[in-house]
Length: 115
Figure: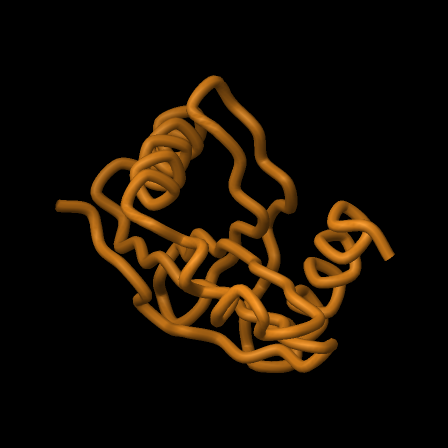
């Protein structure tokens, strides 16, 4: 399976997992000039911007390690764009990462914060 196929499969697994755990999916694969957000959801009063990272093996480390500071900044900028475009000012937000390792999802809640 190529990396794009692994990514799509991982996002589908993550979406099912999140729904099962109380997240209400608002949008998937939001794209803007700043970048892309894999999943945008509501959960526990928060607008949650979720990055999904999938791997079949740990040869290159844990999937979440790929969400470096540069990726975080792009996600934060994209989230701001999404919020402004929907007139969501001052709402509580959170940034989660879902790791899918060999088909098994796990979520890192509040994985990073805007500085």
